[in-house]
Length: 168
Image (cartoon, rainbow, N blue to C red):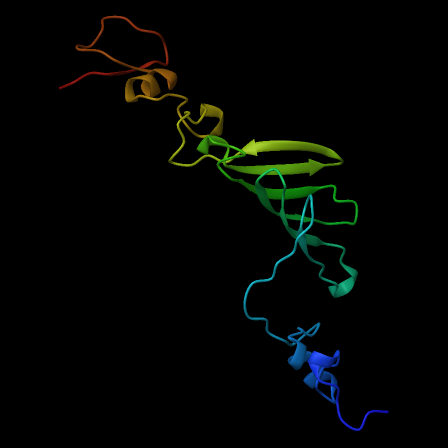
């Protein structure tokens, strides 16, 4: 038995209580403690931080994950299989140079993975009509894709249901 706590330099903690030992060596307790500075999690493929709520027997899981490919993701799913997952993935410029695919909504539905573009104002490609856009890169093209045409004067004939814009 030691008469006094062993110093950190000698392989001890320099403290005679658990709280003192944690404080002396910079440890963060499981709960109720605050960490300052960065938390570095390093591994070769997918370093991750898991959040596992346990209220009422839930099996929901949330993970913040990095990728060796150059993507970071935030995902959530409801069971231990990882299926039925929704994931927001942000890709760095080296992995995906185009801003059109810089942020993706990835899904895993019953084991089948899918990827969906997230449309934003800075995209170079047009948003398809099916996704709420016009599918065009110009105003005239947008009108045409929406079934609207522009004429210098009112035409004498037209196609049923077609809309014509005429300057006044």
